[in-house]
Each structure stands twice: as C-alpha cells, then as structure tokens.
Image 1 (cartoon, each protein chain N blue to C red):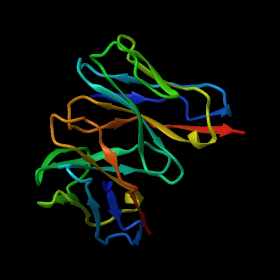
Image 2 (cartoon, rainbow over the protein chains, first blue to last red):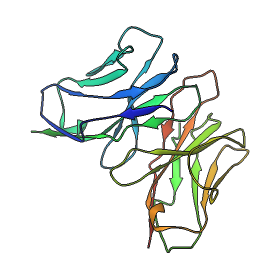
Image 3 (cartoon, one colour):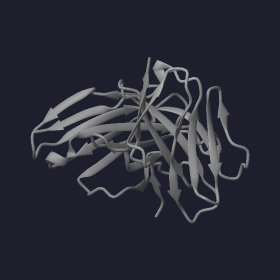
Image 4 (cartoon, each protein chain N blue to C red):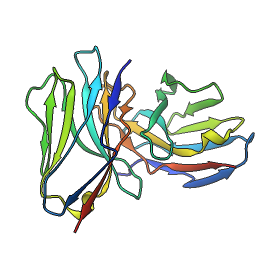
Length: 114
Length: 114
C-alpha cells in the first residue's frame, strides 16, 4: 500500500525568507503523480504544484518549486520569498493512477511571520 | 466557470442519526471523490464516483454510501452516525479521463456529531 509521510508537523519562516517542507512516500509503482496542496484557515484545498514521476525535471510554479528524488522517494517543496498569505497547512499527496484516489500525508502547518 | 460547491457548510447531528452531504462538481467534470478530514489530519479517501458508478472505495464501513447524478453532482450519505464521524468532509471533482489528473476541491462540510 502507498503511504505518504510528512515529518514536520509545524514550521515557521520569516517573511521574504525561503522554507523547505519535506515529504517522503512509499510505493512499488513506477508511474505516478505527486502533489502539494495548500489549505488556508478558510479550509479550501488548493493545488500548489504537481510532479509527474516520469519527468526528471523538477516542477516550478513561480515562488514554489520541488525537489523530486525518485530513487529516494522524496518530494520536498521549497517556497521562496515567503509571503504572509503562504500561512496554511500544506499537504503532500500521491496519486498512482489517473483518476484514482489521492493519498495524503499528515500535513505541515506553516506560519509566515512578519 | 463555477468551482466545486458543497452544502451545507456546517451540520450538527446526534449519534445514531443519518446525514446527507451534497456536492456540485465543477463544470465539465464527470468524476467526484469524497474525503474525510479529521481535525489535524490529512484527508482520507472515502470513495469515488465516475459516470454515476462507484469507482473505488477506501477503508470506510458500508454505512458510508454515495450517489452520483446524471449532471455529475453527488451525495454522501452516512447512516447510524458515530462520534468519530465528526470531521470535515471534502468533495473533489476531476475532468474526463485523458485530461489533466488534478482534483479540484470544494470548501467542505463540517460535520459535528454529539
């Protein structure tokens, strides 16, 4: 069975600084997708960034980038130039077949401090 | 384009009662997934509906059931409510297979069982 682990329950960062959130996963599949979702206090889950396992190049979306290490089964999220609006719960999620179920980690609560 | 909507926003029930939660999928999406998110946890997959048929189920008892309608909206029904059913229930819709694999989440329904 696939599992996703986020070992950092809480993190904080100063505004404009860079922070990295960690995620590891376990699977025997070769083709899958990985996601980082953001859930602000208003609770609507929003996709931050996605990575297809067959792509070697790390995904980047503006201030958000990932470090995808397939052999190590690691998928970390780097947030550059942190902003107050980045304060939220961040969930790492795994999807092993298109249209299938998302498997989420336990979440990391990120606080961006002014 | 209207996003995923859920109703009601909040709900309070007593143990043993039954509840129905509703979800309207995003325009053009034909797949709906339901997740249960306990306080401080990541979402857990309940089941998925594709073209009005159940298309995968997580580790939830049969008292959790669902429907999908021809317009792809969906209902989650929970019978014989238990205290542990208190959670945020998230609905997510996905575009037709072959399109992007992203799941778009609604704002959730907060269920409290007393």
